[in-house]
View (cartoon, helix red, strand yellow):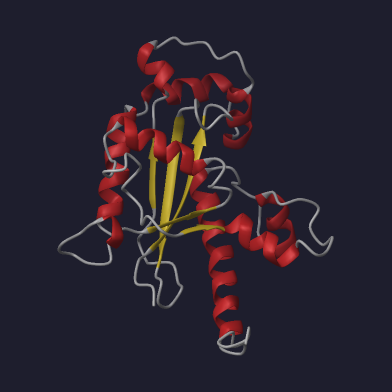
Length: 227
């Protein structure tokens, strides 16, 4: 039986390489592992000043990343740039997230990595978790092996894998992008690619699949099936 909370989280960044990009937004929401419902008032949302702007307040981006964020926000890229300049420093925002996770351990005393929330999200193996590892090392949130200690170390729930298990044998999905899933499931795309919208939608998708797995587990028994 799992008692560790499930933390669905998502980064928005100033680039596409998780080993080099800087977060500009981090959102999260908690799922109760027992009843598989979103925990009320558990939303987290904070902004990060990009590292390049901490080093050079007038840093000039050579990519179209500002145009992308401007389209998402419905404003000009100059407005996005000015917002980023005013965001909290990365170390401040990161500490806010670590403190947030600390409130959702499975026990209030003798907390450890094994009582920490389980990391969950969409495509987090390829993108978000490498950023978590990099920032954890930078801010010394690591275990004795030198890897991040802010999440439960054994389990990760990447909903892109859940989707693959269900749809890999058919052509119902055009792609495994989150927007494609929104279209398929009937979830509005209004506000998409803002981290808080993405974690809400991802949490609902994860909850649906976990409830499905529990329902099937009650009907299908694997014990002794290989004898």
